[in-house]
Length: 105
Image (cartoon, rainbow, N blue to C red; front, side, top):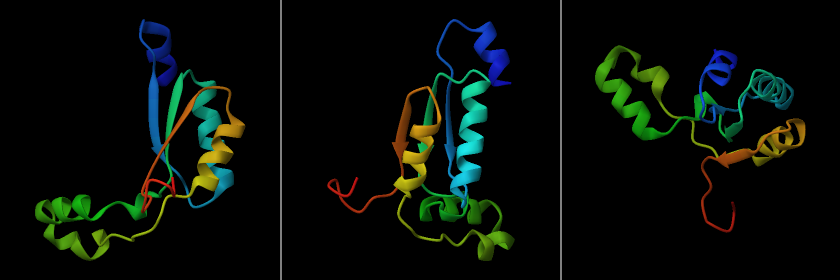
């Protein structure tokens, strides 16, 4: 799909994804995005399981029976994952994710 967008559009194709628990799998995924035509990657330094409280609460309203699995797992972004992605690909990488202070980022 990314390759089709890259081929057919005259604008930059950007992709955002969350890291995997494994740095190796995260790098593999980022390389695939690079090879298929993404021109900028935004790497969110937290896993899908670490999604925020606001997301969990809104999903629980829609699907109350899933509330127990939607309880957020708080945690800081892994900038080790993001740095590994930056070293592995040839395109620009933006980083985002939870950090407690401006200086920590």
